[in-house]
Amino acid sequence: MMVQLGSNLSFVWRRLLAAWDIIYNGSKWRVGDGKTVGFYSHKWLPHPPIPLNEYAKDMRVCELLDEESRQWDRGKLETMFAQRTRQEILALPLDQLNFTDTLIWTENRAEKFIVKTAYRHTLRLYTRPWAKHSSSRAFKPAWSKIWRLNVLPKVRMFLWRACFNCLPTRENLHRR
Image 1 (cartoon, rainbow, N blue to C red):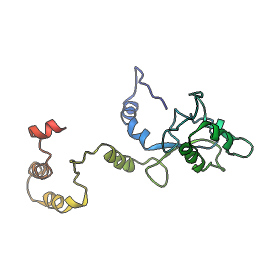
Image 2: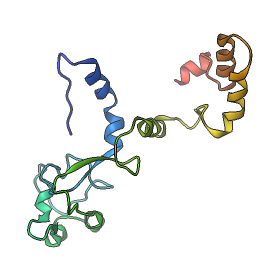
Image 3: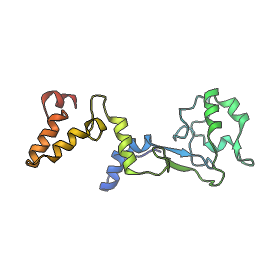
Image 4: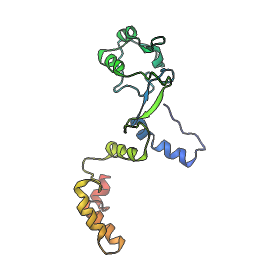
């Protein structure tokens, strides 16, 4: 899917566009009839396809289906794609009950977008190896003790930042 900025966007639409990479990386198309899924323009295979010959870039997935049997056209696949791509395509189950293509969220079993799983997906995508977050089990005892201290909230916040190397020191600011 291609997304472009307009001139008069709402706040919500701007936030969605800011999160587009996260949403795109965590979703893919489930093929129903293949009419709305672009072969190259949409994410529907585990890996980018490897063609054996040159063909139209705007090809739709439906061109690889036999309309009568609602199965993959093996003859076309043999002549158009490398073995790995053929295997990935043939391994995809075609939705026999729902004949429409569906955009699904790959980060949970329900295949529905949930903010919680989007947050975890974002952490996996953008967390650096040196960055630890306080919700990890290794930090739970220290984290709990800091927040139970009977001191001013700003002191607790300072202690938490100091323990987890989050103070805005020159080194940390440079690393960010």
